[in-house]
Length: 331
Image (cartoon, rainbow, N blue to C red; front, side, top):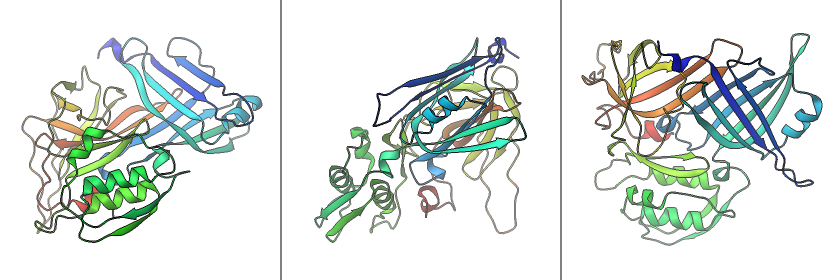
């Protein structure tokens, strides 16, 4: 295996949001070739189209911090940036968001643990609200713009992504009175009354910015090759109805973005989906090329975990037969 996946490296940067004092930046940085001052574990989750919420919780735990530093970090709304990778290989940002909740506990007799529950997309759910009127015969695109303009606090979004929303018009007028996240989920569930089909468009947040993805859109033409040798593929990929799920050594390049990242599985078999009588199974992709539609990074600076879990969709991106759009955008 390549030397580029040896020597773990991590950098955690927290910028406080205290209203009573100036902002302070606290940085915890470690690499695999120097003594580790603190143990840090993390689980960064971007489930993408499997979530339906658009915003995602991630957890970062820090062990045995001194009391003054703990008090600085227990600050709701503080900005968190987590970078991870390898000393001589890929290293980059895997999470950027805000602290939603801080949890303190003691493990065993000697170890203290501070868990930072973080949120990417906080402006969609917390400390923000939309209230206003919606005229009749507005399209899905216009409905989204009206809702965002009615928000108490500005929400950053990709203007070009609005074109992916439907132009079919709502038949009746209505009111807007909910969080931006709740309104956006309802917009995404709207059905075309002519085809009786929902959207193949889904939304998610990245660094607090609302992005719109489309299952049939052209992905990134540059492939990330993952194999047991060079890419750190772990175990056997498992076929799903829509593609394949697989695990590899932590790779910050594999992320949920637009255009979607493409991963090519090299020198690997894919375990077929279990068949059941009366139920359809997916078709294996002969190219073993999958668009990244969900990703979860898990790590422990003093443990075994340092992995990336990937939800992959077949290159075509089309909705598999028997899978309803509602399953992709939440209930």
